[in-house]
Length: 323
Image (cartoon, rainbow, N blue to C red; front, side, top):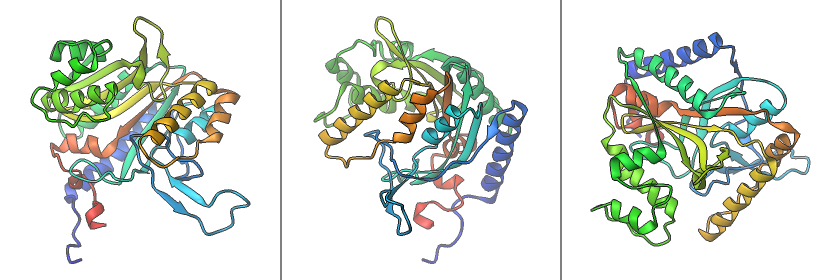
């Protein structure tokens, strides 16, 4: 390899450093504790749409499995700290996802994740907007946020109700976008509408917060009963880039175990490898996770939006092709 130069400009690297400082000052002012948790775990991420890196540990294991998993997020470890009584906390660090490489993806990237005890997802949504607007100020920009529900977004832009519409309606709403329908679920069609019909039209100067998602897309969020029920979850978009995903966190260990089991069933149906469930997280939930809300921000995506680039390599010292 002769191309040894960094993929980001020096100005982009300086912006990252300024953002890191901003994060620490932002949370220090709010009495949110910075913590560090392991990058290697005995458990992986069971989510069927996320692939984890695995490696074999050659040292002493005291009977534990040799396979270790690189974290896709610090979420489970942070929740164990919350259950132990650490209080409001955050982590700024590297995470890893297999199979994710390209213009907007890198197999290792930086995630900022934090939790607020006693908050719900809507209160946390507004704090996330505050942080993003502070980041925009680093490059002399500001954007007024737009807050809407998942249901209203799809109705206003596509004239369909995403909580009740059938698969055929969702499929037809894709218009001329050609997709192989084999094996796709209703949630897959909703995701395709977001990525192919909605996100591309979000303006570069739009800061859009979308909350109260379909209950079928709850992930680790609470579900609020209603007709129909909704997941107490939000996502934040800066221009066409999704930069944050937050939840009013699920605290029920039995429900969490059931969701892990559903993940395992779906992975088996798709022919994906089985992933060991995080028993330590379930034990922490059983002990008692305080009512809280949490959010993860993709730092590299945010930096891309700040710089107006569609290439993640432009904000990384060295992307995966040059590391």
